[in-house]
Image (cartoon, rainbow, N blue to C red; front, side, top):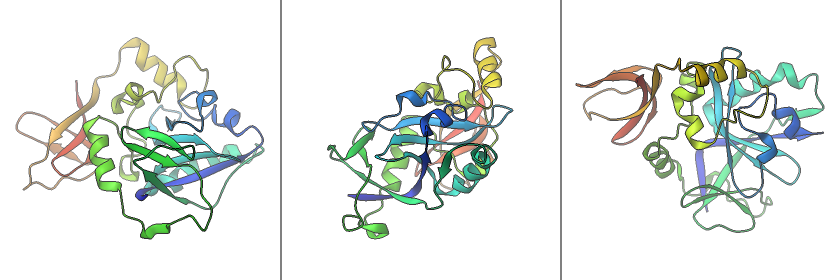
Length: 235
């Protein structure tokens, strides 16, 4: 078992948690299950992605997995709406453990990786477990799947991050924050920038959320790996 140190899980508890989330994330929360992690994004009223990650059904809550740097931003995003609901976003942030072996206690994340949904205090290896962040990050980049960090929050439409390619957007589910902008961009063909991979020059200083330029193109960096990254660039 490994600790995915880059991320944390926050838990939404209370009456009809999945129904509450339906109005604030891009995926259809009716499909959130304990068997597989469901990609989601949370958008501003302008349709820009505030945070993204994966949702998984737990025994007594909906678990939301996202980059640790963006957890507080997500809390601030939901807070005004939680005040008028019967749901609570737990104050604790849990470490996320992953394994390469599927079992009844895991949810599929991606090829070769499964999230351990829940464990007892005695079972938990805590932060001392080997860190799986680097291989997972490389695999995400290889399959053009963005895990947004704080420095890139609130800048891009979901389609600019190719989130629809990974099932994070349901265009038939109904209203959620930013839905009108996201749908209009999708069906009117107004998206001029999209996600692409680029090769990192080892001599260059590549920073998340900053512009980066190669001989052939330039874009805004949203993921950084050892040799490749992902950026949002002109289509």
